[in-house]
Length: 199
Length: 270
Image 1 (cartoon, rainbow over the protein chains, first blue to last red):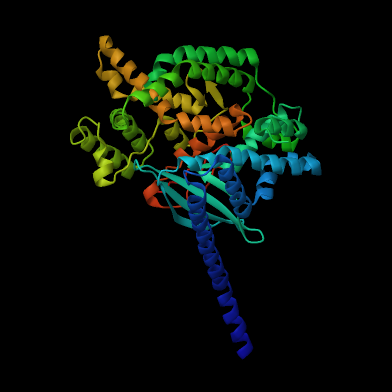
Image 2: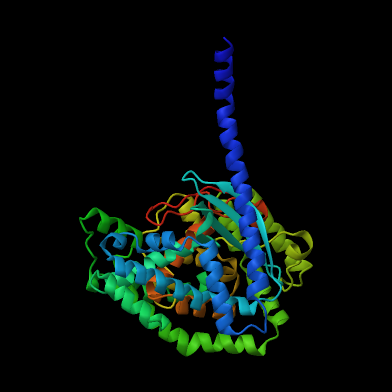
């Protein structure tokens, strides 16, 4: 009898405990994004920073906080299977350089905008969405949503700016380049080398 | 306002589109499931024609619109630009109100109506957005393309319209209907229609001047600017249709548009 009671209690508690777990991880994800925002503002926005130094710092934040292999796999989509190991690793390197070159300099224009985490929820697929806002001096605010996953620690797998997903947009971009190069991933690698000037 | 501009262009644009459609023909959907999924996600059976008009628009923009917008930014002080922007936004309120109402969204229609009354009077003919500054009633946009989406009309294939840029049959129809609905179009006698055309011209320059850096950034960050803009347009429109309000502090990604799905999610977060 005692045992049955215990089991019943356990069964009743189970959903609760998994809920509690989900709740803490939403909080953890929010803290994670909050700390990234602080780190980015403190380390990337200095006006005395050289472009090269800013890019280096941006790259290390990108590597420590983003699930780059996962993002690359998503971006290459159906071409991931077709790509050789060398092509995959070339793509990962070049895509990262493209992100660094395209976005690091945005932080040079920083003019005191406030970054704040405004919400979050767990998704069905186990990832967590963290909502945040950037308040601009002119009163507008920009919506940034972060998709956070636990892959050996919390990592960002997508950034959604005003409803526009970074990885989805790059997936379309990359697919188009590959299609226009006869369905060959090598054509994409060439295009990325040309764009970034990286070896 | 986008609408009144297109009114001017609607007919030639439609004829051109039709002619080009006939000339280029439609791409046939592939049979391989992976290819078919990609074909649906891209949603661009008229890609060669669209790329052609994208290039034409890009050239026109570089040659004409972008320099004017850059000069506009340079010459006018920011508060004046803000005033022009507020004035034009306020003029568009009746069309936004009508679309709020047609989407059955009473609260948003109410906000649009109150904003229009407050800003037209206290805001000195709409030059100051006091409804947002003093009462926190922020502007939202709405158009008949979004109304059609709320009514369940699919977007149709991606189209790049001459001069108007990225669009689709649903949104092009919306632009036409908004133009017809706009009371300023009815109120002005024909010899004063130049006022409406001027308004449209300034409206375009206002939009472009507010996006100088953004578009440059997108072009520099992308490999295929055309494909990137195609994806951005669709994601952006799906986001607009969902009516996310920043003060509702919700999950804007709860129903993130699945790029492969034909019908956008229509959950209303307010």
